[in-house]
Image (cartoon, rainbow, N blue to C red; front, side, top):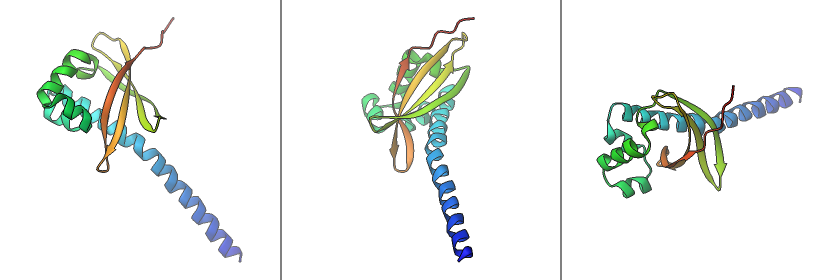
Length: 138
């Protein structure tokens, strides 16, 4: 009987560990998607960067070149970042939002919120909004 209880306890602990890993998996996969898209921008590989955009974004811009032009002009901090750090991953209204802190070439920090969608078992970017950066004082 004692062995059975130990076995059940061990199984419960292992199941909890697996659930914890599953819970963390979207975060690291989402970070990988965002980082991969930024890496593609750094080499002007708009074709690859476009593959990380969700279907709605792809329909909106039509071609990787149009998408690249939008990023160059509208999100220069993402096109050529000096540093990229990930904040919290949150669920809002059933969607996952990843906060990202981007330092641009002039050393300014920008806070962006990436709306993520899961398609065919992989994460893609459904939208990005620029948030107001918190004031920093000395």
